[in-house]
Length: 205
Image (cartoon, rainbow, N blue to C red; front, top):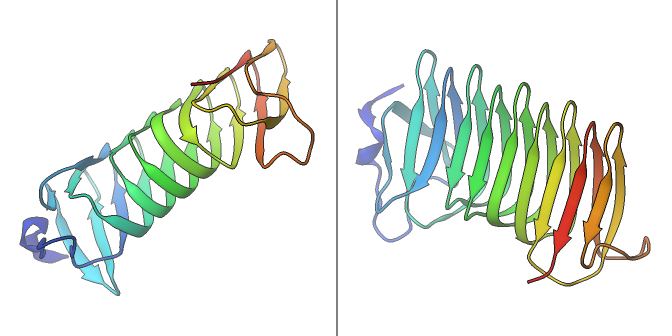
């Protein structure tokens, strides 16, 4: 890995010196909004991709308002949090909780092996979530949402009024939809949910 810290990367305007990010850590990984690119770990940049690997610790990465291509995040034993992230494709593999806030993402795939997933105030076009426990999603806009909660329930709040085609299965709980969650298979927006317990859908501004 490069001996410099990430603070040495060019941050003039929105040219941060990379288009994609690959993060691997043993413990927590956090991406947040900052005035410049800063990180607590060593890094390397290769083929427009920022690589940060922390075999025994956590990673905290601050980014200015920049649009990225792909972001790959993998934590072996802990959680992931992204706040203010803009990218085309986001892939997260976590042991525990995953939290996404104030983000704009085209394709998003999230896996939480032992815990929950929470998404707040974000725009995600295609969202796939596989979680052990509760999934809570609040989106301003989307095309398709596909969620599996192995042992718990799912709650979705959609801040819009367009019709949504819904296919929900709850093994031990109930399914409750309030608002624009109705429509035939030709609806542009689709939600597919498989959960162990209750599913609740709320739409409308």
